[in-house]
Length: 252
Image 1: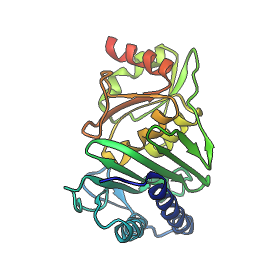
Image 2: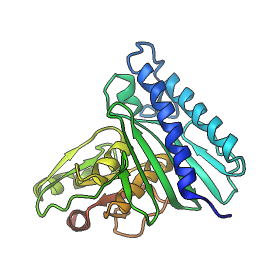
Image 3: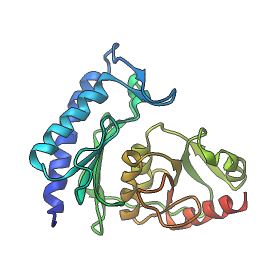
Image 4: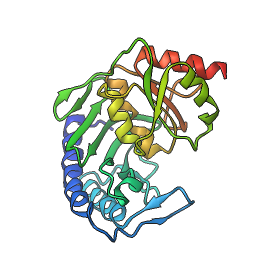
């Protein structure tokens, strides 16, 4: 099956901006109906459900033969060659507490490889996207990773397996942070505002790593091996920063 990448990307951008309007309206809602799903760290609001349905309805109508993988629903047509990966709100806990750092995102993948991705930082009105082998962009402007020689800011999460590496990373001159939205963190690395991400997560979060790759960065798993959506651990950054972080991880 051949795809028209630019055409699909425009549809993805269109629906994400529509969802953005919904989420801006819901941002100040004092009754977002926040509750847990599978575990104590897995949150959802009524707006996650609404946003997911908006995206799903739009894309299923335009691309009925494609598969769909969503954080909020089981796989649909999962055996199809190409499938959309949907994350209606990445940063739900921020959104629920009216912290203006969250995204809504979609990607298109085949097997374990991502070909297109787009994520919208709603409150900042910044739409990030990437097409495989064609670069990464923010609001139409091409973006690139930064390449700092020393130090750097790593976006990571303390509940994850790499916790034992934190002291070593700090001693190596890195500052550790967490925006609670992996889409946003990957966009920040791709645009040169942060230096790296060190995380373990699900496909609907990790699929936006194409932004970093197309912005000139490097993406691997925590051991330095090739990353695919079949994996859950991800390290991204500029080539220089990525190499320095990886050397710390291998020494722990």
